[in-house]
Image (cartoon, rainbow, N blue to C red; front, side):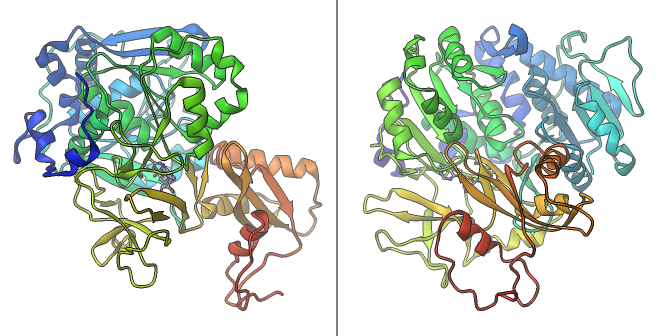
Length: 567
Ligand code: 6R9
């Protein structure tokens, strides 16, 4: 049965209670995402249905039915409870895209604890900042990532348990470490999921801020309502779909739509934990007969670059519906996808903070290539005048994208940072930090971010974090980080630095500095270009004027420079 109904039909009389009814939830009931994504699906008679098909490096493959996901998430829940993990404590998943990550999250949620997924590519500094802020008490990882945790262990007094999911019994375990093998543990048939309520804290996702440390975005179990319905209507997930979300759960897309959405609908999903190549991806689609594919513009642009010929080598006729998120999806990419896959990519716009899709194109709606689409039913989305914060009703005028904060998956606050949370609101509107125009049909057209954050390949990088890390390098006196254009990642990180006395500018030093950041933060935060300068442009009050450096990189007008000190 198709989920397709026209957009206008859906907007009429829309109520979130529609999703509540479908999920059998009434206000005041317990609502535990871990239970909804496994036990409930089994209760609906889909226990033998495949929930997860996983493919790793070297051709390794595993698959789990919904009943196995239920039992194994029980195993994890019982194991954590046995360790003394209490509801509300933060448990981090610092794992590659392996089954333990997907099933582990459900296990954590079943105990009432809070899941904190972090990219396994993070270096020790990125990890330290996020684990200290969250005061995480337990962490799942793999032996290959454990050294990064060991390096910062002294600074993490709250972290009691480091759970290695692939420990080699021949080797000794380090301090606070223990071995746990999900697939070898004895089955746990019954685990009473903790009676979490709508407002119980479920997930803590870290996102980069403009200044200061990354911010922990607090989500609650009620987010399920939005994630379920948007998965059904926008991803158009249906019972016989084979779904592939290419995102890593270290990023909100990989949890909202790589775990919660598909599992709450009882859909079969595939996960590939391999490096990217057009052949890898197309052969994965062909082999598993993927029908629904949720990806990101950088990946789509990389596929475009690989060319049309490689597409023809594979039978991709199983594909029924394609969606994209994370960055502006160029009109060319939409047109190209129509040409080679016979269907357009449907763009979706949302944020870590919004927890679920906000502005989107969905089946039954006319796709305008280059536009993000319209607000999802139940979402009041507007653009605001940047001075008055009043909604703009003029076609083509640029304003700040803002939402009425009343949808289920809305962040509840920033962890330990109520002030930053309050700062996101004006006149009762939640400000996204993005700018857009709206056309006469109500479609949103993305213009850009309203802050300095760099969106490289769909990942948000804070210039401030990179600048702080750069200063820890012995040769760097001062630094300023901006974005520069890139054909695939849209933008990449560029660092301007001044050197300390005694250091000479050289190519070797540039590579050393790049590598320093890659290891400390992550490969994405690594500057792709380091430019040595004698001095950085600063305001009279001493603030680095990133705006000038940015304008130079993007060949834009420099604008007002009256506050420039060293002109
Ligand atoms: C889900 C996710 C959010 C920021 C957002 C915006 C950018 C996301 C977009 C898009 C243009 C789209 N963004 N989707 N820009 N078109 N369809 O991406 O969360 O990592 O928090 O990033 O990404 O700038 O504010 P997050």
